[in-house]
Image (cartoon, rainbow, N blue to C red; front, side):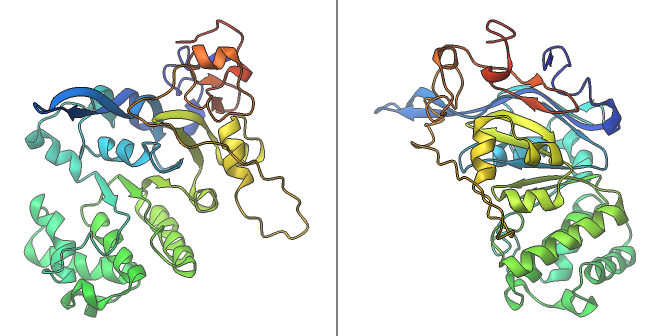
Amino acid sequence: MTTANETNSVKGTDANLGEPLVEVNNVKKYFPVKGGVLKRKVGDVKAVDDISFTVYKGETIGIVGESGSGKSTLGRMIIRLLDPTEGEIRFDGEDITNLPQRKMRPHRRNIQMIFQDPYASLNPRMNIGEIIEEPMLIQNMFTKQEREERVVDLLERVGLGAEARKKYPHEFSGGQRQRIGIARALSTRPQMIIGDEPVSALDVSVQSQVLNLMEDLQDEFDLTYMFIAHDLSVVKHISDRVGVMYLGRMAEIAPKDSLYDKPLHPYTQALISAVPSTNVEEKKERQVLEGDLPSPSNPPAGCPFHTRCPEAHERCKEKRPELAHMGEGHYVACHLYTEPGEHET
């Protein structure tokens, strides 16, 4: 057994996955909590608490977890909508952690985002052509005619047609608006797209259409996806690897089939047991987690999951487990799979 420390943050044994595009090393994001008459800092909300992993070119990595697990905060730090409190983020080999906005701008054309709410993410005062063209204008890309041609081409690729460019967001359904959001994300020819719950606000029938569209566009444009969601069945459909977050930390990360067929962390096991099955003959025992998610402003000592874990013992309350490599790219942060005293913090 090797640990994350020996493999340099979950990447040393994954050389077969290809070339790294995004490297997240020991990243933290703490939001200060202020109180009292003088509004002094009295604590921190530890939204992301020491996470390391790698995203490889051409793959789709899914990030799942309950609300409050820190998955959206993680995505926003990678795209630098939020600045990390500590740690390092590298994109295509370059450290972008502390780049000022002026120097970050060229990178933004290569990392785009699809937001959760297709209603709030589009400017109601701009028509669809202007919305899709805006990122190209900001990046000073192409001539006016080339931008107009690209807007038409992208609208046709996402299934809306050239006539949509003169209309406004309120004239479209939720699924159509999300297609517009996808076209906008593609306008600058990015290498990577981060989808922050991009289908959670859509009807189930529309979800599958948007997911299939995203898969087709990934092949066509050679894209890398980071897909953030709470629905494990959706993540299973689109992802190559899946990372499971709990209370700001990575509990488990593995290839999709390995994670769903043999989940190791008790939290992952509970999440997967709750996924509805379409097989009526399959008998699945539901694992119900007791208690509520602890507050990220006052996380428990030791393993963050021990307050709800049916397998917890004394060591879980005292020592925080690190990700350990269990073979074939499967990592888990759980004392059930490490020897006492081995690589703990």
